[in-house]
Image 1: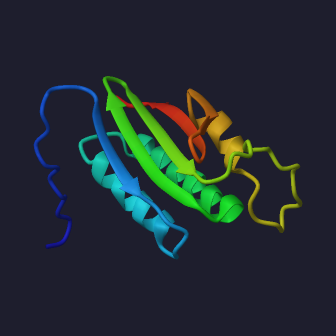
Image 2: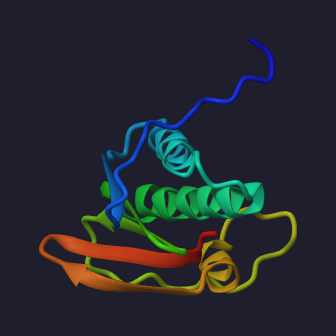
Length: 139
């Protein structure tokens, strides 16, 4: 059916809403995380908010795969007006900005995007690595 929109499953009115997705370094983890995010935000009417969330999830998961080789999980939590995105990985090393690269190189924009698209972001150590998180406004 062309133009059909998937109707999200009914949610309880109790906040917060959350979804956790186990991750691995296998190909397709970032794509699976993006699909999980789109499904979790299916009731959000602003496509730009959804696009920003999907981009940030893609960056955080991609960085966990690329720089640690051991992503653990994606956690999405919604409360009224807010989306928290968390990605856990197995490395205790802090995320570090890379210096600007020439236009013909790819990558290095993850922390720049976090700074410009999210309200807040940060990281903290966890039992076996770290968690990188960001908060977005959601209508």
